[in-house]
Image (cartoon, rainbow, N blue to C red):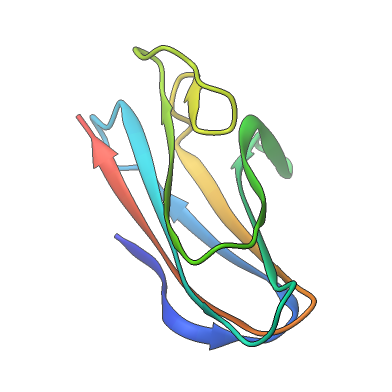
Length: 117
């Protein structure tokens, strides 16, 4: 599922709410950082879940200060071994929000969600 198509984005915070399909046991987020406008550009990415009242950060589900062009994955799944800032061992919440924050200068990125069954 494409959450953020590849595009150049200015300094701001971008959000996309999405539902996890029935039967999904996990999700792999593919963050593709393809270009930056200038030295020192950064991209922060995290997942949040909805607790019935508000969105809250999903503990450990963040990629902070991405500053190099490339792909990086972030997975949430209950049946895996946790790896700091890469793999989060938690049951998959039904309602998630992807949050991408561009800092300093413009960057080009995309984010896709692949559900694991």
